Image (cartoon, rainbow, N blue to C red; front, side, top):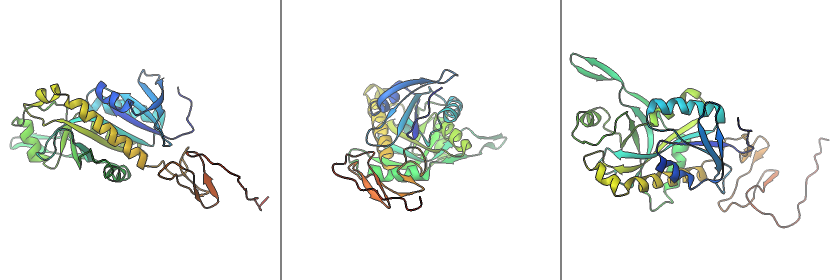
Length: 291
């Protein structure tokens, strides 16, 4: 088991090796940790932030994602969970290379089959409001990213036919979804049941979920989509601060202090935060009159 860190942890989950590699490129000073059950993570730091990033490649499927996300949450105690990777577009205006940030995540297979047809019983989990707000702020400063804030559909299916029965079902029953993928609802459900973990699904669009999927994948679209999703995730973490009072947070019960945009020490109340800056000059302390 790992030794507790003095800095807060965020868990970033992927399904595919290329998704893992895209996130891993942003994480420094990595070390591998192994859960007693065998699940492996690499844990390192995101430079210029208080965050420790724990990165895991879970494989495909929502049920697998749910079980392993719950395991990792209980082990690592992260403040936030992201599922990051590629997806297929469900909207004409959501193009290859765009990024979809999941305002909600839909489980698309829930329902009841009746003589009159299949009756949908929607299951939806909202993305974290705080993380979504950080994402909206972050992408404003990313001119190379075209981002959409929309629901994401999760299903145990690789959609490569826009006229298939399931494609028509999605257009009829989940018509506001901007993308389809295979793991997001599992991770979001595990975080929701934990009760204390913010969660967000961020997906880069690698294809249009139609007959052109194989051609799009062969063109390198998955690599670009994964890199875009990873870049947005890291930008979110540069905006989103740890909770007050957590290890490495920039707030405490003693008073507010904030890191400046350039990483320099900043002042608030009676405290100066030097953790992300360098100070040159004398410091005068204030005697505690209560002693």
